[in-house]
Length: 397
Image (cartoon, rainbow, N blue to C red; front, side, top):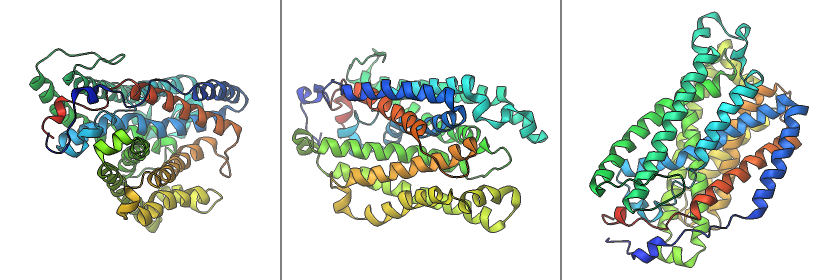
């Protein structure tokens, strides 16, 4: 190991202590109960914000395995010191997937317009029939869960690490390494393909008479940025620990911050490419989606997402001292996360709730805090048990 020297004892230590802050467990139970009350009192608002949170947290949940696949495919050896941290959200992925299924069963008629055939144009009903939509989306979630879980399992098996619910594969290390390389490429290709379709079904077709050829790309890029923003916050927290900052250094904050900046700029490019074609063409069946959001009280959320995801990162993350500052970077990452959440809110909550103006009352707050608490609990469960550094994968670093 040329640039990163560790001992096996250092590698075996956990990243965080295994204790989960009981305050988050209390928040999860409390706000979960309040959310259930909201589901009976105002089901439209409940399912609108529930679906918004599902779309948002799916990006964070899926992002760990996808980013691991990305650094393995691109030979990103710079990521070796944080390789064990990367899949921090892996336990969240099956839970979010199950919640999607639960939503389809219990709240499908409240969320998806294609439950009512009268809402769908005749030539689209075959593609948007509920049984076909949910069958293909369930298969997408099933395959991505399998690939993600296996990738992380193979990585842990390289160092014979036992983690709850992860199988330990007793194969030659070279065979495990080759399988990781193959599965990483497959996972990246399927991430783009599958979540393009999933984004159409779960977000774009909430307005079944509107479509955009760029929407799928915007959907999976939004997913990936949300994950990178959380990863940058996590790395910043770790930088406050002297044993981590001395071993790893600030350059890893810089690398993640640069990736976060780059994908925010790409998100902005896709945003412009979509709006300039649709809005300037002014074809009613396409332009109404933007007109409804810009020329109404919902214009506030529309422009806030642009300000938070493009302008703020552009003005700040160009500067290296900001990207390497563990006190400033988390603040910017939180702003980006807020912008991405507003994006999901603007896409999903607007269409499902049909409210005249943005609303964020006790139902919306309780559901969102329930999801945040769940994400913290499951991520801390992983980080409190996984070894701090890889050993086998660091040998070529």
